[in-house]
Image (cartoon, rainbow, N blue to C red; front, side, top):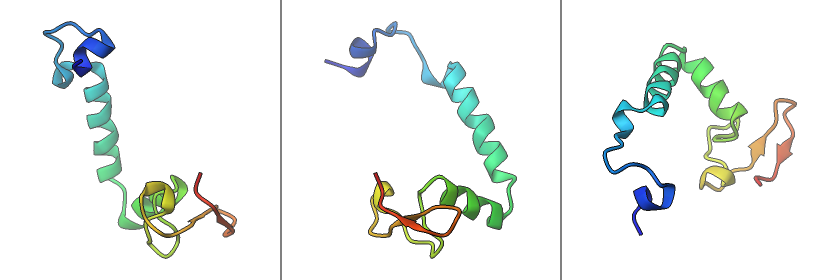
Length: 76
């Protein structure tokens, strides 16, 4: 079963014309305007990397996620 059949989307549905795609583009434009320090802080807050820049377990790496209070937390 194709993804279009599972989601019951019309055959002519085009992701690149969708509202979701345009929202994604705006979000990425905003992210691109951040400084490198702000981008890193965003990745840490999201739990993607820890303060040492290591990919967290949640994101497929071996490092532990850290909260803003500096404590280590196991990835969920």
